[in-house]
Image (cartoon, rainbow, N blue to C red; front, side, top):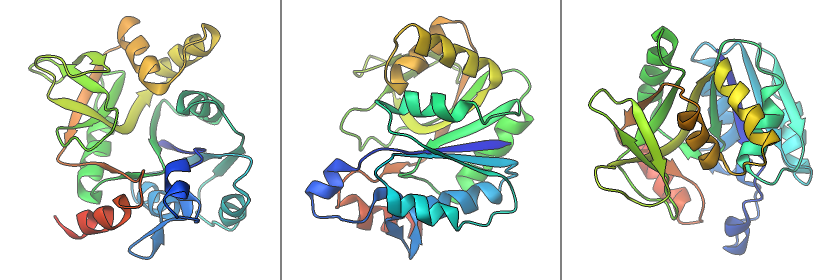
Length: 233
């Protein structure tokens, strides 16, 4: 399983709220966000881990240079206009058929993640497994419509009737989904959510995998909230 981490955002809201540490190096329970994800991936059959950071994050770049993982760590240093473009930069490192992609500030329980990864690895039919949650603590959530078998019908920017889940920011994708990513870039599509909408439009079979709760670290107040969440089961 190939893994990828988008850590190229500026974390501007955290900076405005007085957090000077670059987002990937913010610690939860004494562990930097980026290190936590790397270890989780190593614990779940990682064949490679690819990470993108922006050009201004010198401290993060130096930190990653010292990571010893036992599997290839591909580091891309580039500032991009969106997380979708960051994913595109990472996609050239992906050689296997299945990829798990997440953003650096996505917080979830390890046990749920392990079950999610094992389900994705064992699945033979779907083109992708998207983590979803009915816990909504996002300023601009991406709502997801699913059928009775948790196949994804569509993505919406606003809550529509019957949409009880939102995107959790963890994406399990096969190589054919990366082909759609290339089409999205070529046609001028922007933003990760619009890429996901294009996946459905192109006829890919996406499954939703529910997590009880997923938290993003976007604000200073999210740091203690995430630490408390990780302590609970």
